[in-house]
Length: 103
Image 1 (tube, helix red, strand yellow):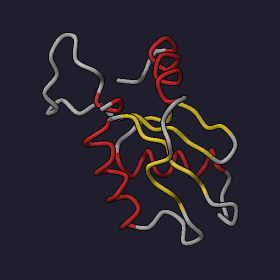
Image 2: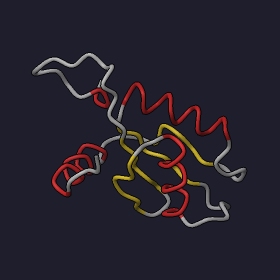
Image 3: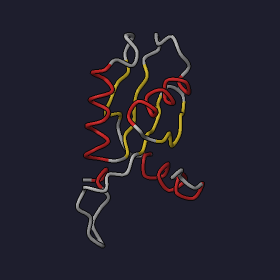
C-alpha cells in the first residue's frame, strides 16, 4: 500500500536527523548493496542512502531502482541522498515505544 502524503511528510521529518546507513558507490546497485540495504530496512525500516557523485544514473533513478530491488518506497530524494522506507511487520512494537530508526 503506497504511503499517503501525510505519512511521507512524517517520515521526512523523522529522517532529517538520520545519517546515511548505506552508500551507493561507483559500481552502482550491486547485489551486495541491495542485501545490505535490505538488512538495514529490516532492522530500522527508515534508511538514508548516500549516492556517489560518479554514479551513471540520476539520484532519483537510483533511488527508484533500489526501492524496487528491496520492496521499499522512496520517501524523498534531496541532492545525492535518498530516504527509503519499508515497514517490517515482524518487529516487535508496543504502544509508546520509539520507532526502530530512533533506537
